[in-house]
Length: 420
Image (tube, rainbow, N blue to C red; front, side, top):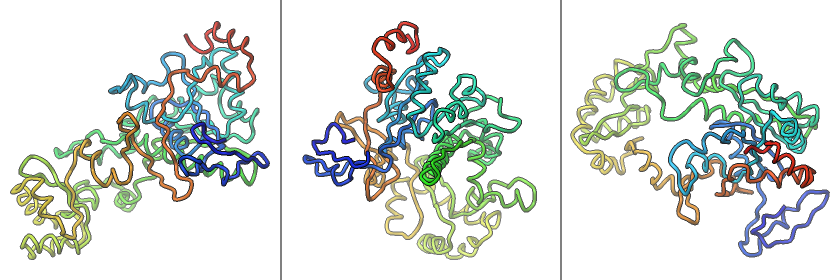
């Protein structure tokens, strides 16, 4: 349906809106997006599932977040707040609706199942077995909606010896061996800046959901998707499994191609205790940089393979970069054909002109900043709805839409189905 803010005429044929009719007379803009008409019931918490469903909401899906009665989504209270709402929550739940249900009541479970009957996608991230205990597992929902696409996100997946282990991102990175190669300058494992397992599982989950929806157009059948954070990590290191597979031993991190083995793919400290990077190992970059630094004699040491043979160049660059400030090196490299970059802090990154030009940091009407949409379609682009829901804000409206009467809704309130 047309958005409330658009004054346009909506023409329907066979229950499908004609794209040409979704033309806003005031903004002169088509408001049809890739996932309009798709309904998502999101039972997940924290980061992977909520980010998956927010990406869908950004591209037009109707996302209804089912929050637990004991405080709702935990990231409502994690981290700094702006105008009473955490930055974390507003950047994982914008454009969604919120209902709060006690799934341990018969009425709460029934409302959740009725909602799932009308949905295209269900996302959950409980520990394996919990969804079944609550009566909202795939089999229960499939019995009432055979076309449902149901995605389960968990640390270790739904099979294997670890399925009962509690874990967040860091533990899965440790088990998978990823943490062992994420080393600080002291050579010891360091906590990654990005929750890699969470993010990779989220994005692979989005891909899986969209693949299942695409297939459903042909078969009419939904599917069950078993997504494990640990699986997602392993799938993303094909470029670093060389010695693991060929020699059956772990890599020597500092000798690996993308982990410090190349002089021209490394991090260097500057005079003002900041850092810069050379971010490419191709020889033409090495030739450009070392010629300008008047050390062409070091160029042969940049030849593959990575490892100790490149140490003379690393030592030279380490000493050289300490002779100027980061800002001075930015000026020095201006116009040099080299993959050079200053190591920005996160605030500087948010203000970087490339990020701003790509609208990856955007502002609402109040000047509050938000993360933008990374998938940029030429046709039917996504659109950010900056509004994130208050806890349980849509309880009554969703219940009415499912056919519950006002009297039934009042009785459900009194019984605690919607929380306190």
